[in-house]
Image (cartoon, rainbow, N blue to C red; front, side):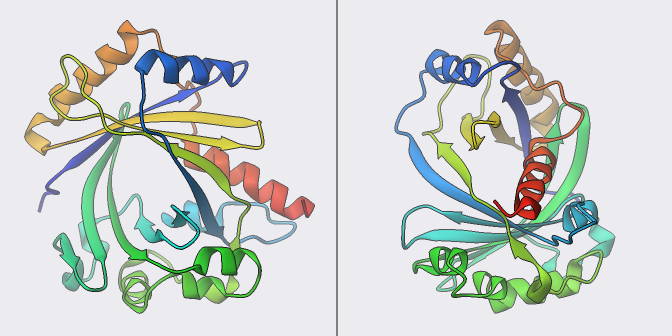
Length: 251
């Protein structure tokens, strides 16, 4: 079994100030910015401030793209073919549920893993309702997503026990072409409280072309001397660590 696509990522991070990322945005000539809100759900327990779900390879993410549109994703990363129920062995898109199941290789530098996710688009105010305490976290996800989680998760997850973390301010730009890279490049920036600032560049390539495409993307970033993140922790881990600590402080 082999995924049909490979997502290849490079994360840029400001070592001293957010101005480095501002400079990178200008240098890349990014256009048509879209402002989103990204909210993660985690198992937040006082006196045990760990990323309990992320630690077992479960990511619960909700994106608000406007007041009444967005999507919810349950992602298993790293995942294994052998942990998936046979009902979830193939990519699929279904309407009218606007549901997508994706099995994709995930490459970031030398780290390579398999990621399996189910995303459902929605057109209502569920995120703002959940943030206001008027909707439980379970209602952010569809019945089919909960079924997927129960059938494929590496560990039991009771969504009634998870918490919404404070929001991440996200900016997504139009995809763009660069010399030497066949795939279009996607840019997305995450900012949290003026403390964390990341710009992720990513492409999607067929497995047979992934090595060449990764080398080309690396060369592009190196030629521009963009500030590549040197942390051994990925951006999701660092953002969740920060947000859990903030949540436990009651801020």
